[in-house]
Length: 192
Image 1: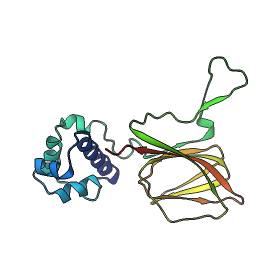
Image 2 (image 1 turned 90 degrees about the vertical axis):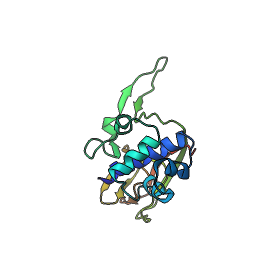
Image 3 (image 1 turned 180 degrees about the vertical axis):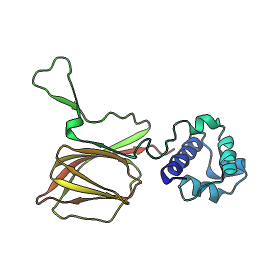
Image 4 (image 1 turned 180 degrees about the horizontal axis):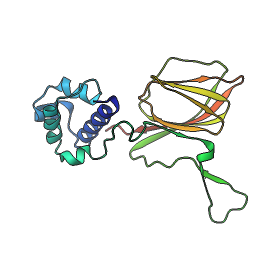
């Protein structure tokens, strides 16, 4: 099973458990498994057997077809969305003159906190790979950076943007001669 599918399954179990307002222990008891196993599954640290997964889904009172409906396999949808400045969509609003609107990204996010940050990186600025508990949107205001993920490097420059799951280990490196700055928007899901 691919890691991204495991994460999708883990997240769906955790979200449904929280929606039902039951504890990890209560779900474990209903599915006849240990609390530790549920915790490991929810944190994407282990892959349950098919029978255990079915027992957990049934304990959560979800139809199997509904549970797997939106789970995507590799190649169907990248966890990283890149938008280049020439891909932004122009649109007009009523009662404006001299305004140029370009839609960068529209994404529905329910039950979340949004944190907007201006990040500036000095030349050759580096840090270790980090993870955040949020989806991260980056818009390059100036300069050039190379975003490093586990085994992927993505080059961004002024006007480019990117959206990704912050739980993927990542870090930016300023690859230009001068400072680089970006607008960063964090989408944190509400903890229930």
